[in-house]
Length: 364
Image (cartoon, rainbow, N blue to C red; front, side):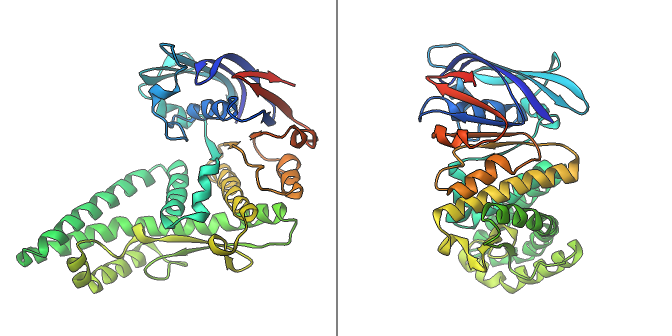
């Protein structure tokens, strides 16, 4: 898949612009000129909401009634086009046909995003790393979102029951039912996460090695309430039921569920040391970048769909060796990179450069 062109009207600080794209696209300029706004506009064509967490109403240029985005792209062996109109909420059309929801565009356009906010994956607690795997699996597996929703529903119901049990012990028989329901959904999540981690690791390790010039080794370990490696769905369900029963008394006292995939962690290591504690800023950024690019590669491998890589402010805190690898060594898929320093752009051997200034874009 390749995005050939975009037209933008009244979006954020961009009044009106039209741009054609290449395989590698560098968007440069000073801060607050609209670089990230351009990436965000591209991302909306995946059918998802803003990766910056903004409401639709916040995307329309100040003083305007609506914003309009159009794109021409190549996907599924043919040229296609899509349009998004934002007026209170987003509406979308594909090849001139209005869609019931913008999410319908996700079948045609997929993207992986790196933004500075994604550093929480390494710097913060396990929740961000679980979110990364779950979001990737939702793009790759058609039923994963439904399984995740079912697990969260069962978890909420079990926690409500645990709080009631503290005062009403006669409800204890109901806990068996919710243990079974939670374990059934939880086992599917555990299995899919373990399989995904195993498939992701060699791809991420290869990219990380390229970024570090072969001097550092990345490792990933999915950690849960029992050993996950090589486990089947049936085995995971059996083990999770045992864990829930073992910790039942403790859970009744606390009013919360202490075992299950909602407590999993994806440990990220560099040369066998935890990146969260021992990694430098540049190493941590390289970890996230390697995971994101590996996610794109795995999505391409498993689904046949070519995701676009949107890399926002990826060059900061990376040495020249790592920057050069990003600019000149990533050959698969279409890439969009934002940066401030024009000298970075000059080191790129091939591709397209776009300067953003006061919401105006110009291709070099």
